[in-house]
Length: 212
Image 1 (cartoon, rainbow, N blue to C red):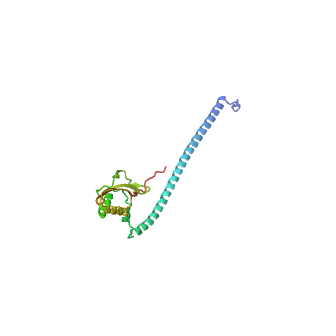
Image 2 (cartoon, rainbow, N blue to C red):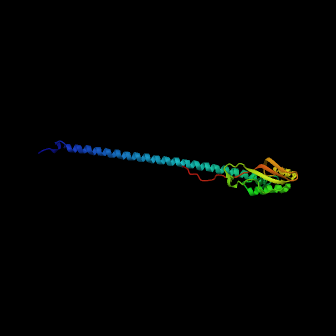
Image 3 (tube, rainbow, N blue to C red):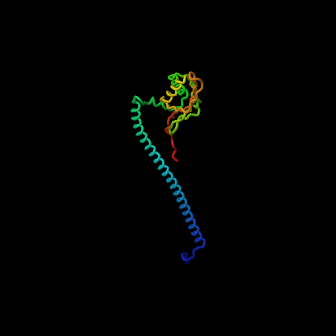
């Protein structure tokens, strides 16, 4: 009776075991690579998400602080405005007449005409070139804007001198830079070059900001 357990292993069976082991190693390496790539991608996504959330939180915190600061400033300004408006010598209407928030050519011409009537001179109605088309209406930093004036009035020497005084002493700041006279002392024509101002309304710049 032959003993089969002592018979040598077939060469094919060792090759199969080696191939099987190699396949197992390859599969394990491939799975490990996929896991590493997935982990790296997930980490990158989570890190980007965390950084974005951090920027959003910072932006919200800044907006909250700005709102608190603006609210405090508004309360202070409201108190100051009430005190100013109750004054007999300086109030909001007087300030608006002195430094209007818009460029108003017809209103400016009407103002000069009232000064002419008070002074006893005739005023043709023009105060220079109308620059309404290029005038600044709002600005983030509000500052006075110049308005060039070229005013012609007719009358006696004394009445024209009175008009100049009334213009310089008027509630609206008007800086006279030059006066040209023609005619006689009883009937003069004066061409006055001057500058006045208006202060555009301030644009608070409230808007939306996308956090990147």
